[in-house]
Image (cartoon, rainbow, N blue to C red; front, side, top):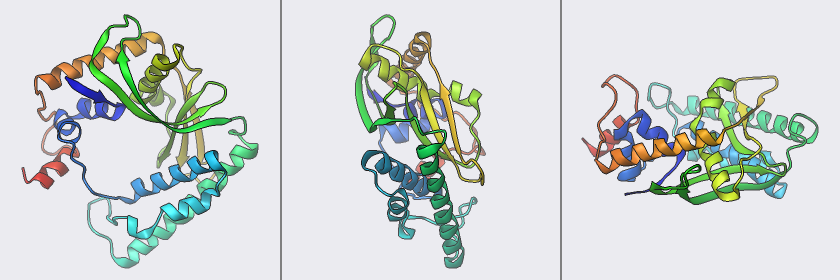
Length: 260
């Protein structure tokens, strides 16, 4: 029986069952720190501590966006020279300061001024049940982290992105559905909405994007049905690669690591 699952686990299995096997069955972690990952983590921590403690987000960002925490490679996987790495770091540092300055302005007087955050980084581990039939699910637990919960019943996630989010994509995303399910199973009611607050790295003006999305009880039931389907396939050890050798997938990185 599959013990637990998160929205990223569902995404991994749908993308490539072999990738799911490496990440969620064997539990292998690839120790790489690309600059987008470190940048996004530093932005996330800065916003979290600003909301939780009133900390200066620029100072928190700089403390967490340290040069020695980053692996410097271009998009083709080639290592950057020292000069190139320095230039990339400084550009991203300035970009982070710009985004966080704008975020604080929006929280104080702009589109986020009414977002009263009552909880940050809410980790959950919830026993799964079907929201409609109340039947047990073939996976014991659902897990995840909710970035923020608002006083008015909305909750959501922070994202950093080089591209503008589309409403249609957000409305079809697994993450809000998964978190809606957690909220419903915990509070016995549907939340007001799920909110994405997106930090747009390439936009010079209005770089904070806010999108809201909703889910129905029927959609939550459909997600649980999908989880059951994945659990059955995992029990049957169906971990075949779902793409060709030329397709991009992180499963190749794990195979290289394991010398498969």
